[in-house]
Image (cartoon, rainbow over all chains, first blue to last red; front, top):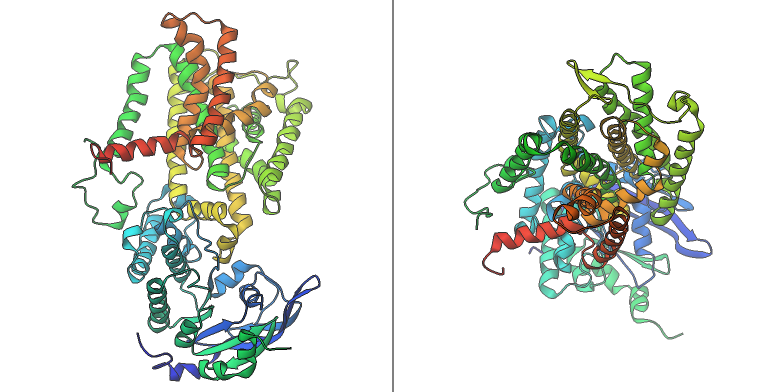
Length: 268
Length: 359
């Protein structure tokens, strides 16, 4: 595993891929996010951390269009975002994994990852009925890509296993594979290491770094394991009670007094 | 011992993605087709063909349709009977208005009418799920059934209010009406079922089938991956209703030979087909055939099969026995094997592969 951030210094000064400006989100009287601004630059690994209920997952849901913020602006690839359905975000190149694994339980690993290719497949109903000619060629072409992902994530042996039968760690890995199959420009990972043991965390960390290095994918991740966050990420944004309390490199953030207070608590 | 994939190596993705990747499966399907096309017409009696095989095939088609919707896409529908009715009446009107066009064409085309009606009644599925959707489709059932009785134009202002099946021919051989032999009707129906099953199998193994199952298993994740929920669900409704419509048209024209449709396409029929896919196996095309075979042939077997082997059984008793058996089996399957006969078949095959070792 390489040192965090090395070799990506050039990219780190890269363009802003996604900018969140003054976003507020409330459910009735409950304010989930209040006036949060930050940006994600091309090619970086950006961590979003904070105590429970800080609004991290809500932030991801706002970014991929599942929630509509009452105030603020989101700019993705230089284009201001209008109110939209999540599949528009998907077609713009935002992929996502979930805190509680959201795989298609009745389908095999292969089918789950193939489902991630849906947006790239366009052969019509007629050819699908025949499953021949163009439709079959398209299917094989995407199968090749999916096999590359399967090799990359080292899950060859469970290719045809229904994902409902897989252990949790592998399910998380398949879910990452399904998101990668979309060839996203921005990959959102919601607690990719939750509930994993040390070996599984090491594997997952390796995959995240390799995705960043090999495919140049921009990654935003939520994680509670501070060791992992500090090692993996280039920049960290810290939320508490829906507000941003710190933003910067791991070293800056971990030295920040308000972050230490948020995590350890302060006597009132 | 005979059912083993040892020595069959896949050298291309195409062969790995085949619907029957194991050679023995392919041989089995070809055998079944040979029996269906050659052995049954050659050796079976007219009675067997017209009261066992033809109902079985009609119900298989309807069960495949409902399985696409309920088993693959996870949308419960109680309107299958009505969608079958749309197909039957569409076919009746089409062949009355254009008697020159072959009836087989109209049986297939009437599926499209049913598909259109299915899409209209499928629109609420974006907002409502589960039991509530079942109730919404129940509205389709009652509304359409009302149309079948109250709109005389649909049954050509007959005094009886029934569909009258006229004689239609193909190469001068009668295929509908009283003079059509059971064999002819059987051949046409069998061909329809084989072709449409092949289409359904292709659909569920490809991009569209994956989208359906994704919506069934986790609709939020599916949407975040770029699968449009409304389009996917409506397509499932369209395909499902198409199959139901063709089944309904085939039921009237190739099986019943006419009759009062409000009986044939009522809510009982919808439930009947739902039971078929529950017993057969949700989300499995094979399950649709198993379920149809089981539910459509059980009454016949009890009524005629038991007396034939020397156990006397009155007609009414047989009917009651059917109800008891079907009811009991549904409860049994819901508890023991929610994936139905198709899953039992799969387990059996797996055991056979390993035999004589436990794993």
